[in-house]
Amino acid sequence: MKQGLLTSITLLFCLISFAQSADLDKENFKVSYVKLPTKPILDDTKRTYSTNNRGISISGFSKVKSGGTLDYNYTFNGTEIGEVNINKNKIEKKDKEGKVVSVRYEYMVVVTYSSSGSLSLNNAETAENFQKTYSESTTYKSSTFSSYTKAKDYYNNNRTNLRNKYRSAHKSTIISNINTYTNRAYGYIPYTTEYEYLWILGSKKHPEFQKHHEAFDKVKAAFDNIKYDEPIDEIKKEMEPIIEYFNSVIPNYPGDKRKIRKVRYASYYNIANLYYYLEMPEKVKEYAQKIIDNNYDKKDGKHFINKADKLIKSLEINKTNTRHMKVLTEDLSNVPDEEEETETADVELNKAYLITKENDTTLVDIKSSDIASIGYKLKTVEYDQNGTPIGSRVKSAKKCKELVFVDGLHYRNIKFKESSIKSGAVDAGQMVLGGATDKLCKVLFESDKINLYLFNESEMVILPAGSEKGKSTMGAGFVFGFKKNLTKYAEGCPTVIEKVANKEYKNNQESLLKFCDELTKCSSTPAQDGN
Image (cartoon, rainbow, N blue to C red):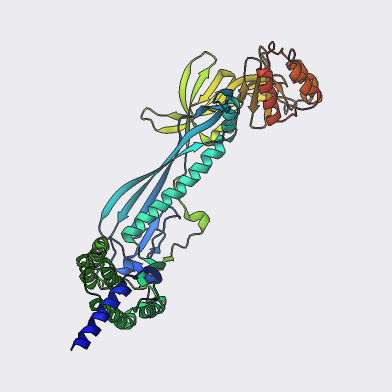
């Protein structure tokens, strides 16, 4: 009798000792199932959709050319450019005593790009109609520049590329968000690469270590064979002895010691998780409550109850008892890619202030596609009395003094002789025989000494302060007299003249911008007219 009692006590102390080394490791196993929709189309013969945007897709549905049970109409509203700011940052260099020994400034371009789109849905099955809007916004921050002018020029030279970059990124994000929403509501999404875990004893000294790992190996092997589109009845049978084993461990570890409760917790958790993926939510809730009562990690018990309730509701809504089923996703629209997308063409408008030669200022809209053609003329959007676009209005460059876009792009009327003019050019109905004419040019650099402009995105025009006419840098007189011209512009500034003599400047945009910047910073008298 005493010997039996002694043996029991010894065994109990042994179990307690082993329990104190009950380290648990997460061991992963693969799960595969179909994520069920929250608004299912129960009749699978009616799982069709149509859309005007080829980026929209619904898992488990057939795409048709028109008249789908779900009909989506997507509109991209364009990308707006916010206020362009050039932020100035003071950089101080200090010596060991903390005294400022030098100061410099850095300049950074900061601008916000905002895009929006809208989606309308007609559900023929439920007669549901709704519209949803989407928006994306990104604040762009450039690298730092050593001067305000360099930062401004960088933005002006890259503004189109930057807008296109964020426009494209925003469109992709909006379509992705639409697909996420649409598939959550209606789609049947196969999950084939998801992983879950069981809590398995990590200490080899523990008496359950080997059996824990043997049980996990059987779970992993069985779940590796699960397919989202095949029944799991056989897997349920394979899991019965595994669940029975984890249940058998529980009574061997009685008491309230934390590490004793930890061993029991592993069994409760593993059983609850297996039942969840075996689609037995009521059993999940049963063991979730045991986790809570065990008082080791109550939040996991509450988590399982929440998951089980959601699974019960999802199965009820979808009128099924399983998440394993065939999923057919196909394209029956029979429309080639180049014809498939009938998305409303994006018409991006850019606001600008137009200042006429009479100094009248008007806020106008200009299509992005028309900006590149600004030169001899300017095309603005014309509206009717209701604010509806009805066409375009063309103004001759000779009537325009200045054009300032709200995002910072700047055009100015410059009179110069275009290098490409040979026998003449037509300008607002007049024949101009090779002389200097009014043209709207993009501002690249302006100062009280020298100005640089860009005409037709290809031809630079240099205009010394005080001159009424500019000179094309592509003209023969400028090209063959390059050093002579720059030397005359730099009169009174020996450091710049020396650089001209040393051929440090080239006849390209980057180098001429450098010339203008260095000439402006030179403490000399203004350059004279080079014409």
